[in-house]
Image 1 (cartoon, rainbow, N blue to C red):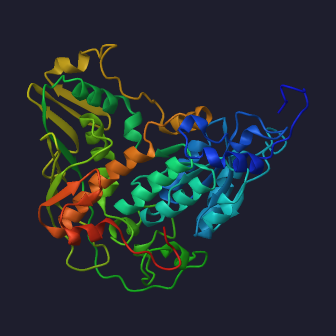
Image 2 (image 1 turned 120 degrees about the vertical axis):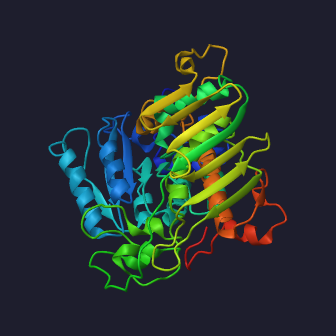
Image 3 (image 1 turned 60 degrees about the vertical axis):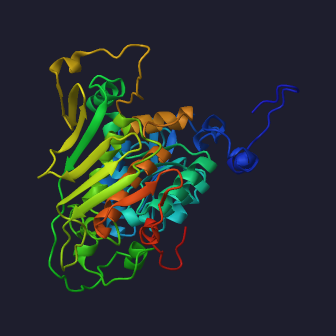
Length: 447
């Protein structure tokens, strides 16, 4: 950079910049760290260097999507399954074939340990698509390493992890986007704007519906396959014997078994609930709070490896009296139904409906509530890396939406009415329930 006083050129390394910026880390987002790609004589200022952590089913999709953006350059991939890491690296190399002397591309590195990837100073941002029990730790480490973060939903395995992650992201001034891509679809935004602007009259109830997971029989232990660091895959979760239905398929990218096991996730209540309950929160204007009462019932497998909830019904009560019922698709229609005193709006992927139908043609006036407008979820993330503005699905909003889901899971397991203080993020006078807002981590992992 050039000194305005004496005209001399000063060299500022990324490490020096990070050190000098440490005191500003707690300031608002506009004061945060500039991406590494703006430094260096041979580095175009528009390039965003990406590392991809977790390249299985969702991670590969995220990686392919990122490779479609001209301003993005993937320089590293990471997975505890070396076969998947190698496949991802080959995917990247194929995309950039012939570009080694153009645009400064020097190849794609392959890692097993996400901490080694995060130690690279040339990486500006990471895509994280690991199992749910591996969401919080890599994302927290990425924030501390000065990386911006795209994290697949649900945000975290526990409410406590979500609070620590949100606080850390804000403390280190990182740009953060969670994979709640429905916020970047026009029909969901329209539905929420109609509700927020009173088109259905006073909001009374919201109904959320989605499918459930099947159970399975007892699965015997199997030899750990070559290339999989199973102990690292378990990470902070309790030790358990390996079986393919616990982890992911060794061939292909079909839906993995860990999604159906409570040590690694909560089932569909966070799988689809993180999408639909997030939209319910958006439409109600409760993105930064939550319900005050929760009551639920659910069926759980009596034996077998997969032990998350089956058919279920949850009733959330908010401080303003609005009730949200979240239930399996046999009880509530897939999607989100906002019911008011003067009409209703229903929205799901690819469809929106209303009563009266004229609601869909109404215009949101300039002086009314206009919600964040994004037409591409990954594109919004990459744009915000450059502008340092907040994304459409930032970390605190993601934490609150995930919390709604996890509150439902806790209520399903306890089978009784719970009172929740969304300000303190604690159950009211309920020590048993409060023990479930966190899970112990297997040594040496900790928050």
